[in-house]
Length: 325
Image (tube, rainbow, N blue to C red; front, side):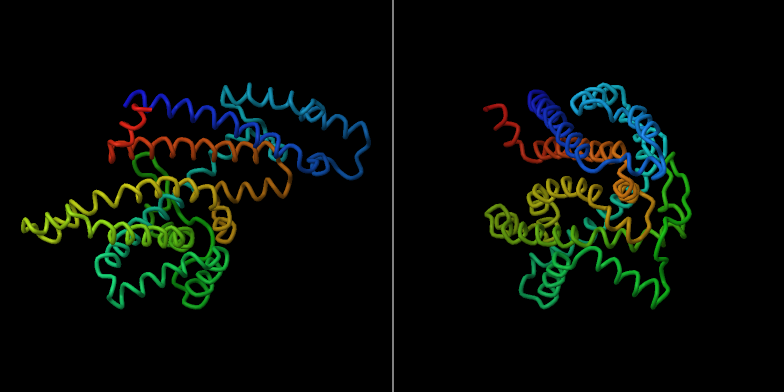
């Protein structure tokens, strides 16, 4: 197990290094932030001073070297627009994004697994076919359109839920979140549902496919032949096996929930990292864009590492195969 973890850590370090190059060089060759930082009436001396102050006069490889030196000590540069450390700004907005992503993931688990399991165990029922048809809609409908429809129906027509903002927050066990207040929870439902819709559909189809495959296996037939109850057969024997691919996909999809929450946060004016990223892109605030992308890369790498470890615990053949290699 130790060898397995060490090997994964080395792979993760290589991925982070390569992605830092791609992200930094990719962002820094697009646009000219000087046009956004100086007044159109500024003279050449003022423009030269701004370029020098932000280090934009250095060669790109030298800028990358200074960026990596700073990153090693937790400094990802200062925002051109806000004049504050980019990492500090992103960390300030991160709790809102994490709360939204965690809630969306929880919705995907609570709704997706039972619905997929039901559709897999009773595939010929009309309700199961309706569940699978609904999952197709979840895959097909674009997130921005669904978000607008949710606002139109539940906020404008029915007036049940607020359309934008995060609402009131409260602190519990040192964690500040909207979940702990009634007003905050009402603000959270629509954006979380919008973000979770695709993942709910994905979990439904994964769970159903796993259940349909597992139900034909000999160990399920033997468990039934031994006289075990349906609840025990499904809850212990079937669920343990079908959860392996579901856990893997959910772990990776949590990273995508964070990374691709930009559209949802923009539609619902949710004050998270995605909304900050859009503002940074519009103003060519390179340090924030680079810092955001690097944090997303780190999140994906860490989540992937955790998923690999969980996968090896659920299926010992994975780590045995690694040791054999």
